Amino acid sequence: MLNRTAVSDFLLLEFSDVRELQLLHFTVFLVVYLATITGNLLIISSVALDHHLHTPMYFFLMNLAIQDLGQISVTVPKSMINSLLNTRHISYSGCVAQVFLFLFFVSSNLSILTIMAYDRYVAICNPLHYEMVINRQACIEMLAGVWIAGFLYATLNTTGTFATCFCSNVVNQFFCETPQLIRLTCSDLNLTEMTTIGIGVVLSLGCFVYIFVTYVQIFITVLRLPSAKGRQKAFSTCIPHLIVCSTFIFTGSIAYMKPVSNTPSWQELLFTVMYSMVPPMMNPVIYSIRNKEIKKAMSKVLGVRYISRHT
Image (tube, rainbow, N blue to C red; front, top):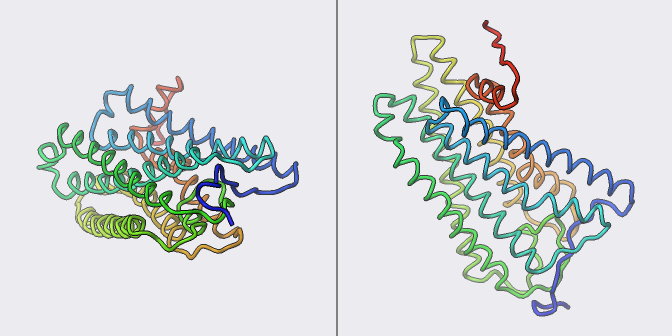
């Protein structure tokens, strides 16, 4: 039996012991990672360089892209390196850092998605008060709250997870995921970890309910708009955000609320990939595919001419 003092490193999930499949895993993850980095950097550059996009909605979108970069960079590169070098190891300190940073970015991601829903609600349901409510100072304060809350939650969760003794160092996931680490503990959940899990569940449920109710009110307001063009513009900014929120919350909830098995499960791996890798990769596509302003700004960054379908 291993205890905490004996655990100097952890063994992450190995996708395959066949060298060709390991290289295939490395290649697939590399393509996904590069696509995610490119897409999100393009979003950040477009918003930062185009003064037409210096509005609260795009300010929040830029910060979401920054968080997506951090989220995928915490987990994927280490998994790729392990496959390339034919190893499974991650150091104890590396695992601690991975848990902390991943929780920080994921919790911050959920918070900013909630704020973005509030931003759309005020813009569509209370447009006359938008500039007064969502002003520069309010944006900075809300964003600061997102980062501070994410830091505190990640600190509390990481502390609770690694305050216990581990009876094994075999993690049945491609990164140090909290549910998998809890399964390795020798004792029952401590008070800190139970409190952290409870806070996480309550906050996630609260964010989900708030986003759902907000969008019900938004869609009711949009359907009452007399102008078809106005409805189209409102839907073009709301539907992408709703898709992102739904994908992130649904897959993340299943991954964390599903009972953890003692053996590696492809189902668990699939849901983990869905909530940890797919949203950061798809966000730039989803947010730009129906947004003319983002398309124009990206075209300028890339040095290509933007041609609208309506011109």
